[in-house]
Structure formats: C-alpha cells, structure tokens
Image 1 (cartoon, rainbow, N blue to C red):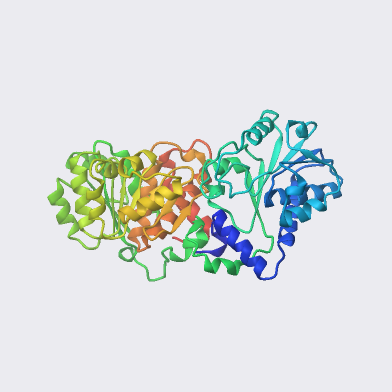
Image 2 (cartoon, rainbow, N blue to C red):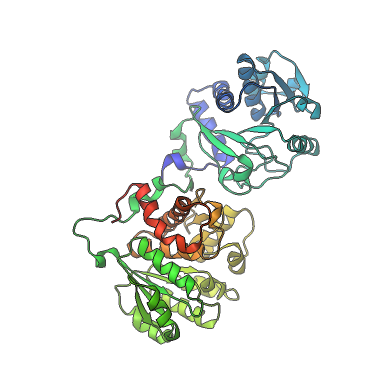
Length: 488
C-alpha cells in the first residue's frame, strides 16, 4: 500500500511526532510549521477580517497561538481566547504562548463578538470523550452565529480514530498535518471537517515503518498495479469468465450486475437465470450469455466448467431457502465469489453457516441493514468492518458514503470519492458486478473490492446529477480511461 495514503490513528500520529523529535527536529519547530500552514491556508481563502482564535490547554492550543501570531503579523485583527490559564501551559505550547504579546482572553462567547472567522484550536484528534459543557456551548454559539470556521487538525469534539463526534461544530476548512486520520474520512467526521488540507510540516516518513499501519485512504496508488493488464496477444478467454446468477422476477438487479462485470473487463459474462426469466434476460443482452438454471443440481453441473473464474449471487435473488442453497453451492466451488444483497440476508438466522462455507477468496458487500443481520459487532464503522472480516474470513465491503473495505488480516481502506448521487436504487448491484468482473480477471479479493468501490464512485462522478443505476455500467470505461490505463 502507498505510504502517502496511510491513515494514522491519533496514537500512531503521536508516535510519529515522538520519533521525528527524537530524530532531531524540535517539537517547537513542528508546532511553528503547523500553525504557519493553517495561517497560510486562511490567507489563501479569506480576505483580512477580524479573527477569533480559540485555544485549548494542549498542543492544539499551541498551534492556535502560532496561527494567531502569524495572522497578526500579516495585519489581521486577532483576538485570542484560551481555555484555562496561560501559566498552566506546558512544553511547546507554553513556548509559543510566550511569543504571543497581545492579550489572552478567557474562553467564552464574548470572544466571538465582531469576529468574521473563527479558528478552532481547542482540541485535536486524540480527544475521545464528549466536550465539557462550556466548550460545547461555545461551539454551539459559533454555529448559531454562522461564523466561518477553520479547524486545526480536526473540529474539536471529533475523534480522529473513529469519525464519531460529540459537540463538534462543522468547519469550512480543516488543516491537518503529515497524514490524514480515519476520522477525516469516516462519517460524520468527513462532513464536519469541510474542505480538508493536508500540510507537510516535516514529520519523518521513516517513522511509519515501525507502526505496522493497516489503514489507508482508498486510492488507485494502493491497487493500481494489481489491475488486469491487456497485451497484444490477449483474447477473451484470458480475461476471465464471470458467472452471475440472475434473479427472477426481480430481473433488473442481475442485469445491472452483469453489465458492470462486462464493463469492468471480464472477457465473458454468463447470466444463469430461472427458466421463466430466460426470455427477459436474453432480450436485454447482446454481449452476455444467458443460460437457464432450473435448480441447485443444474448449478452444480454449470460449476463443473472450471472456466468460470468469478461468481456472483445476490442481486434480485430473493432471500429464501433457494438462495441460501445456491450460495453454499457457489462457495463449495472454491472460486472467487461475491455475495451481495439477498445472498447475505438469506443467512440472517444462521450467519455461522455462511462463514464456515467460505474457503476461497470471497467478497461480502452488505449495506448497514444487511450487515446488522449477519454481524453483532459494535463500535465505529472501521472497527465493525474489521471485526466482521475477521469473523467471516471474507473481504468485507461495508457500504455507504464512507464505504470501508476490510480484509480478514486486518488491512482496511476507507473510500472518499463516492458522490451522493449514488444513493439510488440499483447502484449496489452495479458495484457487486464491478467487483466480480475484476475478480474474474484474477485480481486479488481485497484489491478487487477496493478498486471496484473506487471505480464505482469515479464512474458516478463522471455523470453528475440525475444519475440512475442503469447509467453507471457505461460510465465505468470513462472512469478507467481517466485512471490512465487502456482497457480496450
């Protein structure tokens, strides 16, 4: 995985700070650079106006003192309010507080009077408890006054490890340092951060080697090398053969998935459907093969063909016993497999049976409701996805505006490119088809899931408002072209 896309917990960032300082970079210098970066980003976005800088009792507050000093030096009218006493500050924060030669006001609503911009330097990403009532009340007053807000590291009250928040007010701009944290991408943290800028303050990248980082932002840099490549001698049988079990009478979901698998690059796509639905599916396809599938015994015969390299069940399948049997037969074939939608709900009363059957690379793609039927995990979204992947033995795609892809070995990516236009029926079926299309071409399950999620968002972004699910498959080639790799 790419170093630049690593997501560090607050504890990991603390260790990077410690190692950087141990390597010879003074903590006071890192704080100076951090505050200077915030001041510079403010100067790029706003004209001079009265600023209220709200400082906390720790290093986040120390950053705030630097911001205040830098802005004042550029001629901005600055008022600084501190939670606690200046004499109680320690270390680097005390050093920079001593360089602020203007008044320090007590933290309270009066500090906001006349302000056109607020710098929130109260608490950083390591705060995992609710804000005290006076601080929460002050931030609520910032929101009531509709003041523009710039957050240092994270909006105060946002847990950088989880994205969960208590008492935080939404920022227009968040400036953080070195590497992003999971809370910058997980909801509601992502929305609370507003525009997020990552500033380089000279933290030592070698410090990451000792951390064993297992969380990244979902970015092509992490999986692009694993994307299937086309050579001049490539033919369709070399590009994989995806088998999609289409539902009936709910036929639209299976058709969307099959088209997405083909657009993802699978050389062949076969859709196996109940005999009653054969005509409907056959009329819808020109490039995909449609085969009647009477029952589970017929599926066994179909799977005897080892040329099927990626299997998908779930879209439109129905959540009854037949789907459950079909899922177990697919898993018994021990080939790369995607189970989505009804194929997951079919095991709501017996998730252990599903997990015990997973022996080959498998991707489960639940939304929040389907996830809750299968797993009894608790905690934030990243923690839940990781626990579910470990329990099931499958790559887990926990869908949403902040989709998390987690592997059984603990690796995880958080996706951030999905536009809200994807919140419409059928787009999840397209995602399942996209992933199985990549699996069929031999892409490893974790990388295929991560790439599928990213391409899904990128394809939607190329369309814009008014998107419906049937628009998506034909936008996948556009997303691939923009990714910069020929897929013709």
